[in-house]
Image: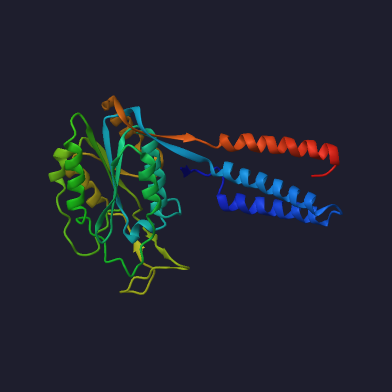
Length: 316
């Protein structure tokens, strides 16, 4: 069982608690038998609880389903160095735009296998290739701003082993296309020399290098202030390095796109969709089935009962 709340659960819980407390206070003040008071408070509690559960939108995970899927393995390689939180994408952190754009890619290429790896001081596979795109999106949600004390400078070479392992594993599957979205601001700040990515070209059938940031640059917030440059003690500024990003794209023979709005990626996605095929994957699909209606029926019955009680007694 998993939950996909319709509204934030904290907000709904607080509102329902306030309503329950107000109604309970009114019931307690009535001059009636204690058993009637307890009965009314219990019924209202159950109604509030059912409303909360329905808002949580409980879903049952169904495995072993025949599904129509695309013959695509889509790999996200995401730079999570501290510079990716520089606030120069419409005044917001670069990573906010990254997550929005990746959600768009998943939606457009629905039915593909997706995988996610991240890198800062080292690379890490957060989600191997899976048909369950929600696992990949959940993995995105675990990405958070690294501490400046953890950051050791940006190095675009740390992806080398994990990237190759994922690309090789995808290429072992017969009849599948391997698509890579390499996501970064291109900065190298640890004096390393950018390696050649051309050894990956033979594994890659499509995708793009997506660049985030501006030439003017952006500040990186930490706590209530901004990160300082230790050499000048001024606010540190992160600037996109499009030369590095273009080189990576050229090496892998895919497009480079300076992302300024989500739609910038659409022409690449349309090309990928046109080249893909739909296949039936027997018994390997995952689906989510809503179960909230199980709780709607008793809620309706209880509300009808309250209407009858109110008509007969003139109160809850």
